[in-house]
Length: 417
Image 1 (cartoon, rainbow, N blue to C red):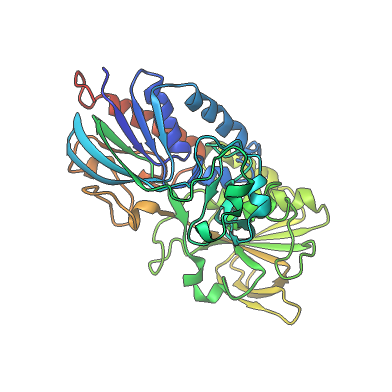
Image 2 (cartoon, helix red, strand yellow; image 1 turned 90 degrees about the horizontal axis):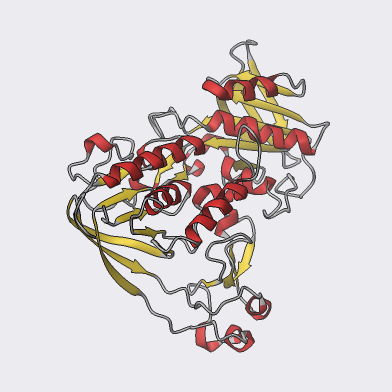
């Protein structure tokens, strides 16, 4: 029962699978392409339905990973190739140079002298960091990384001079690691659908039209505005906010499926607005509202708020008015007729697009929507976890990933990896 497990993806699903496998005695290689663990969940403001911050749960998982000697965490890494069969896979992993070594104590001295700015992808490019940066305050590993695509390198070297610990290595090189494993768990997660492809909704052209993941960062205290939900053109507080459901979802021209959590995410974000601005008004334009099981109460609670309107209707277009506000034109199915109303901020509920759809591993079979279904795989020992297998919420991802770890145990029992 000593076979190793490779987990691809270091979000909540990948960490869960890795922890469960390691705490049952398996050697685990946890590979994450970003410079930190946590994935999309680390960028959230709060979970539904309890509305607690996700870093609480993430920090528990970080601690379990730190103290377990059976887990090898490889950030900034990608699996290049997997060959072999269940119980006897060989994986080749490439790790990009971080340009910061293990001596880093996150003192911030390097940031103070860095002359170059870059878009902050943790905040979906709504803010900037220096070329040398800590991804976020609770990042694991808690050490800096240098974006060499913008860094001036040895022509500058101000960070090298400022670091009294000798932690900066501008000549650090890529590394290749080969591991033997019995199973591969793919927890590669998702990305928000590109709302810029939906031309009638104005994303990318109208400043006060944002997507739902950007709204999470806008609402977070460690986000680009310190948690203040404001207009994107003039930073003024919002008084009227609209949420547009199924932005690109359930649409044969974009994402044909329902991502299952978008309705709940918008209801949660409506709660952010109402809590921050008691006099604010919120409109949620929907095709169908979906709040299955225990989440029904969460929806019903928000439905009682007199300042929140649920309007059944497909949004036809969003335009910018003379004041910079976003004007929404929508068919009001239940009320009859057509509505046209301006808002300080419009949030598009974009769906979950699987990362594997555009960045899949060798020999992994995907369905028509780009998800990895277990029963479709032609290679035993390739196991999907979390959103890699279909659009689900965080709780379901955790449950699903625990099951993925159990399936990994069944691969190559008795063989050593």
